[in-house]
View 1 (tube, one colour):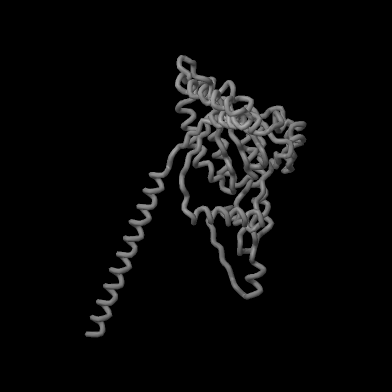
View 2 (spheres, one colour):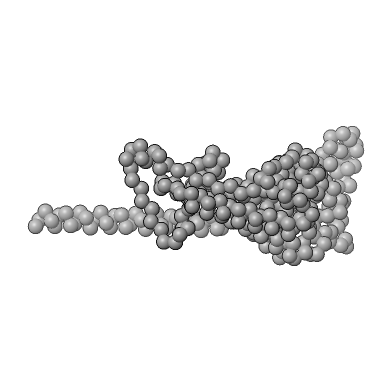
Length: 334
């Protein structure tokens, strides 16, 4: 009895300690989330000032000392006078989207789009600097829907592709009123891929059985460890084709003049080829657009910052790497 009492006391202390530790960890996690939320913010940067400062630095560097002092006095007078009485110039809101497998930048994009819609006038525009090789269907579908919100409100949208907008990236880009691509940017890849590694042969070699039970004829088509059937493969391909058809319908809605039979083959093209095919409207870089608009528009860069824990960033990196190596877990990618 004494032994049982000692054991019960020890067990009670252990449970209490574990409960206290769990409570402490939960409190720390909540505090971390609260700090993260408190650091969430929308950053606003006026870009016209950056270009004016660049030009002035060059002028100052080349001007003689007397000229530099004169220029400094003139700039001080300009700042004092400001732009009193001048009408508000149309604004060009500049957004950035750097895509990964899950289109995780959509979280920031939706906040930035909401901020634009809350303040934009009918003569304002949006420039999205887009870079993405594509990824999951739901992720990029939602990102494209965020851009469609701008179109529905009549806000003109230009997408600039300096390096790559392929697959899910092009799903987003085609929503724009105008697509501008650098001559060697990668464009297109209008296709869908699904990949599932199968380890059944390895399990059989070591006499390991695997059972999979489902309710519903097509709850699982292809599996990681079970035996894949011809019927399952056919259903999987049917699902791929359905997503591809929806992808093509989406593009046809926004770019009706495209020859989809020619471009929706999963191939990608460089910028100059994409222009000939009608996938983009002009050749150039995002820098060209900003320099061209800086005299007649206020350039405003918006960045919604939401810190992510290291574990999430690491998971996204490893997931993207696995997908590119063909080790994905059965998701569909555009």
